[in-house]
Length: 356
Image 1 (tube, rainbow, N blue to C red):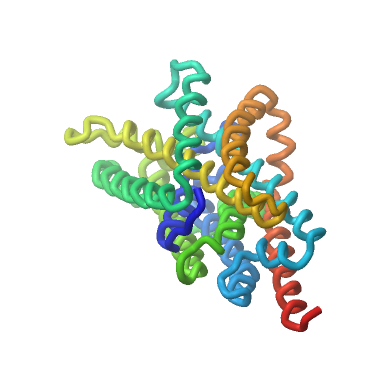
Image 2 (cartoon, rainbow, N blue to C red):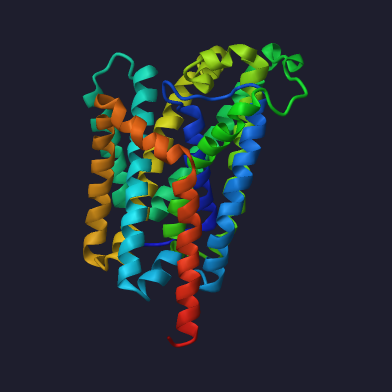
């Protein structure tokens, strides 16, 4: 399961992971789908880009090594601290991904099947992906991303007759009182920052190229999706539980009969890949922070199985998810992590240069 990957493959996986959260909204999530949605998307990506700056500086100063490995090489105490911190955040991200995947599948293609079927089939695919490793999963992400691009082109072409540009209006905000909360929530969905932080040392060549590529593609894709929602459904969009799936359901063309079958396949695969890359990131944390190289591969498989299985806890105990989600959706845990860990890595690197 060891190995490296190119920055393009990792960027495709991270972009697919980020776009996945847009297509698999959970019940009760408060999302603005008016013109404010464009503003929220741009602002959240600007904050995400700013959050990557200290991380990219740390990676460049270390010669391509991950900040996690730099800290682990200097201090066992700090290594254990960041190991626990990142592991907990990765576990929440993975459990939420499992919950999103299950809700999406049970609302669409698995609407009449027992939950056990979903977990068995998805779990088997996830464990296989983790077993095959980072390089194979990155290649799969490129293929699935190409499928997503094709899907969006097909949907856009099929919906041309019903797109109404007059539904767009010149307003940056619809409800200024919700702008901060919506932007914070959108930023908090960028757990890809944690994945890149752990895996950047596994990239062949200049890993920093991954970030602008994945951020740019993700932002563009979310803007296109919002454009389609608003110009097709207008102000009815907030009433739809899964807007993108609804788009694919109404965009019926003769060639493929129903596009929503492809839609379901892509998002289930995207969820599996998101979980797999969270497991790869956890593997690096175990290897670097807890110096358990031999156990790291097994730990990744256990993490994948536990995170997917534990997602059912959020279904059975929704209050548990509500508490965790409120903490994470503020964006502060992710933002602080994005600042603290690279700062520690820079300090450790400076101390090493001075021989202290």
